[in-house]
Every structure is written in C-alpha cells, then in structure tokens.
Image 1 (tube, rainbow, N blue to C red):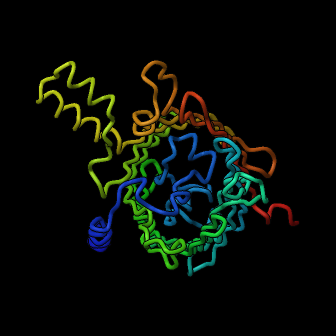
Image 2 (tube, rainbow, N blue to C red):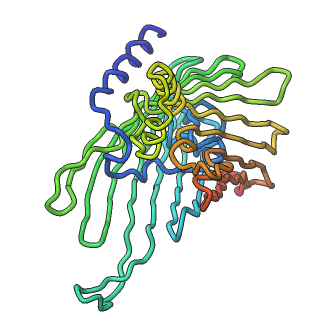
Image 3 (cartoon, helix red, strand yellow):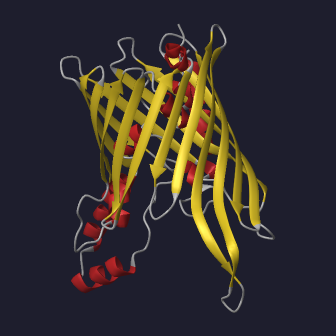
Length: 345
C-alpha cells in the first residue's frame, strides 16, 4: 500500500509541468476561502481529518463517514460590496465511500452601465460559480484517496466562460489521529469556452502539502501548510524595493540569501488550533506571502495574521474567522454546519 501511495504522489507531482503563477489564471475565485475555520488558519488547511465537511472542498480525501448527512453553509463578507458563499451536503454509503455535493460562488456586486458619453443606460451584475461533486474512499486504516470534479461558470455581463477541473488528493492519518499528512493537486482542467474573442486561459493549478500534529497532553494542534509547490519563485518585482536595494548597495550574496528565504516563506502557512474543549476551539494563522505582498512599510500592522473561533450550540457547529489582508480592509467569514438527521426522531 505504501508503494502504491508513493507512485500516486509521484504521478501527481509530475503534473507540475503545467503550473502557472498566480494572477495569470482565470477562475481565481476557486482559491477564496470556503469556511471560517480555514480563513482563521491562514487560508490553508488540508491536513485535519474530523467531522468538518468544509475541509473537503480543499482536500476531498478528508471526506469520511463522520460527515454523513451534514449540511454546511459559509458566507464571506469580502472587500467592498463583494460577497462569496459556499454550501455543501455530504452523504456516506457503506462499502462505497463518502460523497459530497457543493456550490461555491462569488458575487462582484452591481455595476452601472453607461454609453460612450457617460449616460447611464442600466445596471448589470457579475459573478462566478463552481458546482462540485466530491468523493473519498478509505484505502486502509491510515490512507484515504479523494477527488473533486468541478463545473465552472463565469459571467461578466457580455463575457461568459465555462470550465471544468478536477482535484486529486491523498491523506495519511495515524492510528491515534495525532498526526495527519496530506497532498493535494488542485484545479487540473481547462477552459471549455473562452471569454468573447479572447484566448483560452489557464486555471489556477496548484500542488499543496500539509502536516498537522496534535499533542497528547496539551490541547493544541499545530499545522504546517506548503502551497504552490509547482513553482519555486512566487516573488514579483517591486520597483520600490529595487530602488532601495540599489541605493543601499547591499552585498550580492546577502541579496541572494534574502531572496531564497523570502521565496521559501511565501510557500509556508503556519496555523494553530487551541482545543479548549470538545465544543470550543480558538484558532490562529500566519500567511507570510499575504503579509509580504500586502503590507505597507510605514504601518505593517497585523497584515497576514488571522484568527477565529469555533463552537457548538445545540445541534449547530458555528465558526468565525477574521483575516487581515490590508491595513484598509479585513475579511469576516461565518460558517455553520449541522447534521440533518439530528432533527429527526
């Protein structure tokens, strides 16, 4: 079994030849947060296997029978008047596996349409949608395999596009569930119909790897997430930094060392969950790439840091996550899940 998993991971890794950098792709809304828990953990969490159905959107191999008959809903109050949402339902079938059906969307709000002279002639809206079917199967005591199939629709007034993508993943969980390791290949697919007369665009392909460790005598779970492994260089040329470097005249070796550490940090997200009780958790996350790209040197603040809470009230699991993207804006994400069978005697 270990040999088969090794071959599977090797096959997934070989797909890195089709990688593209962020910002060069269409359907980037697929990378927005689907749950308050993930938002609170730095925007990345693929290596926790429990009864949380939200995690299956980012790692389908986390689907399991503990999520049976669960309904999950998320609303993200994004920047300006942009809103994003997610809904899923999960069902377990004995000897077959666990299935999920989900919808993810982003609403860019209302826009005013004008003619060439600036006269208002009406209003229009824009949005993007993904319809997802997920499946996972437990391979043995420790390993599970999963896949998401996505149908994608993008609507920008007169410009529309259809696309299709697949996520593939494998997860290892120790017998006592104290250690979890996962690898995910996301958004392998293509644009079926392009926007107007434009060219076919790439999807936000990505390879992720994650580890979490829960300590036996301490109610803490630590997580280390590695993202965009298909591409080493995640930096971009900042004219201000280039000017400062030339003025200061930093040694070339020092610049290379800084460049290596900076690129390494951009692949890493660190997060922590304080498992206060079975019904209450406190969560924190740190995303270095987010901080490096969105901070303002004059007032760095908490950009790149995130936090949140998770608690249970009666039959409902509620979560809240807050992430600081910029000094001028932060996002608030709310999630709720429940098991529908709990309402039936």
